[in-house]
Structures are given as structure tokens and as C-alpha cells.
Image 1 (cartoon, rainbow, N blue to C red):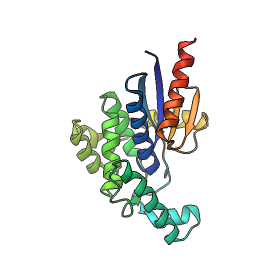
Image 2 (cartoon, rainbow, N blue to C red):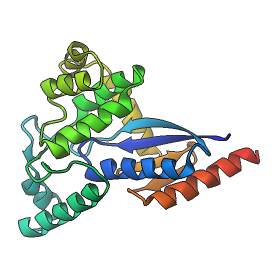
Image 3 (cartoon, rainbow, N blue to C red):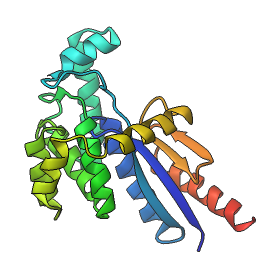
Image 4 (cartoon, rainbow, N blue to C red):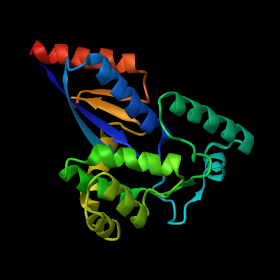
Amino acid sequence: MQKVRIDLVSDVACPWCAIGYRRLEQALETLNGEIDVELVWQPFELNRDMPPEGEPILEHLCRKYGKDAASMEQSQREIMAVAEELGLNFRGALERRANNTFAAHRVLAWAGTQHQETALQLALFEAYFGEAKNPADPQVLREKAIEVGLDGDTAEAIARSDQYADEVRAAEQRFMEAGVNAVPAFILDGRYLISGAQPADVLVDALRQVAEENASR
């Protein structure tokens, strides 16, 4: 069986990242063990300069994209509908605030050392889009860490410190230099970049192509 590594560059504040991961799950269900996939999450901050209190999401998006509130709300509702079709909880999406997620990425880096990064990523997607909670709040990170079987005290301590800051910044820089300027981004075996939350069949075809190339080496 051929092995393919996927570096998934993502932010827990990105709705399309949650959707993109669910479509990846669908692709892997289709492949049904045909390819051994190693998934490694990589950090990206949509709102690196956002102050701690954040900003109401529609206000933030209107300012960012130069559109009126009605247009942005309609766009968000369309994203919510796509998410709902995939079984994702986006019920709090319109109530959320735009937040900086650096603390979340640092705790996720630690979760990776415990082989629980995917579980915590999904819990934070649920917290942010389903419950409209701040995914970088130390108390939220504590709560969600406990939910997935991690030590809550450690998660909160990391969130309140600068632990894993160097690792996260280095990873962010590495993937920006590799050409990632939007998320989600799927990098297959360090060679191919797939941008955006592509349909499952696109991911299936890409994974098979890389696996075939690996087999012919």
C-alpha cells in the first residue's frame, strides 16, 4: 500500500477549513484503505492582527471584503447550508466573533504531540461555528481539551503562556514561503498544492495520482 502525506494548512476560524476536512474524510471513505494517508495539520492565522476582544463576524467581513451586511449575511448562510449538508454544526456561525487564533494553534501543536490534534481541531471547529465561542480563550481550550481526553490544566497553561510559539511561527512561515496564502490548503507529499475546500472526488483523484507516482519511483 502506498503512503501519502497530507499537510493540511488550516485555521480553526476558517469555515471552509472545516468543510474541506469533512470532504477529505469523504474522500478517505471512498478510498476505503486503498492509500495509507498521514494527515498533519499546519497553522495559519486569518486574523493575525485582531485584538483579544475580537470583532463581530459580519462587521469584520464587511470591512474586509468591502460589502454590505446583507450580502455578507447571505454569503455566510450559504456556507452554513453547505456545512449542514456535510453534517457539521454551524448553528452559531452568525453569532461568532472574528478572533485571533494563535493561542489555539499553540495548544493544537501540543495536542499533536499527544496524537490528538485532529480531535481537538474538530472540537474547536464545533466550539467556534456551532457554539460561537472564542477558540483561543484559555477556558474554551481547557474545556475542549478535556472533551477529547487531553489534560485541561496543561492546555490552559499553554494558552496562557508562549509555549509552542516558535514552532507555530516557524510552520506558518514555512508554508507561506511555499506559496500558501489562503486556507484550506492541502499539500500532498510536499509536492502538490490543492487550494480550497475541493470536492471529495477531486481529492480522491489527486491522492491516487500521487500514490501512483510514488509506486513508479
